[in-house]
Image 1 (cartoon, rainbow, N blue to C red):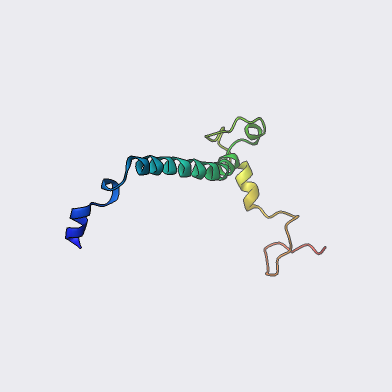
Image 2: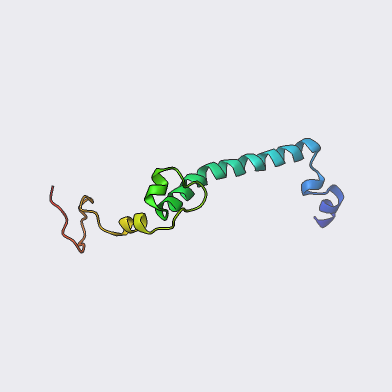
Amino acid sequence: MAENIKKHGHGMDRMTTGDKIFTVCNYIFWVIVLLIVLYPLYLIVICSVSDPYAVMNGEVLLWPVDFSWIAARSWASPSPWAWPTPWPTSSPARAW
């Protein structure tokens, strides 16, 4: 088996120029797709720790602006409009 690999080569040695171009274009394509998918998730995180007024004015693009825990605190606090849960909670569930 080892002689077979040495004799015929493997990986990039056996790839033609067209194969190499395709591989590079394929990697570029999938990196772009990955960025398109991950950026909205990243934007949610940086908007949650940015100043709410900076978010509303569209100033937050790549980095948090005027770091603030205001939005993140609203996630942690129980909402009075939350769905009632079947398990006991610290606050009584609202009956609809």
